[in-house]
Image 1 (cartoon, helix red, strand yellow):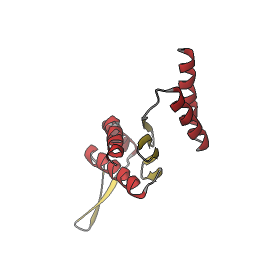
Image 2: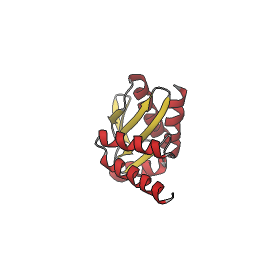
Image 3: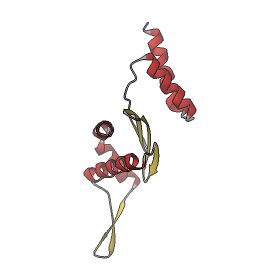
Image 4: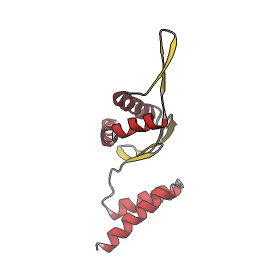
Length: 138
């Protein structure tokens, strides 16, 4: 279970939180917070955004989910028992990816099969490009 947390911590650390916050400002994506029975709308802080994403990952682990769409986040997490797997985090206008092992040709082939199976053709095209680069570098 700790290797899963390490994987999503790497994703959280790789995200440009200033950019995410700037998207909130530009697109006027606010949170509604109740304070003294009043609803206040405000832009969340970077720490609050990080906390939100972390709680989404924790929920995915608890419920053993491989996909979730929540608020501005869409997350695909392809994992198996004992293997962190690949994580793709999409925030409306930004895309962040953690890939556990994309170095070997075999792991790329397996990832391509999974992407096609899930009809994630954009990701499949990127994996195919990586496979083609491996063939060129032989």
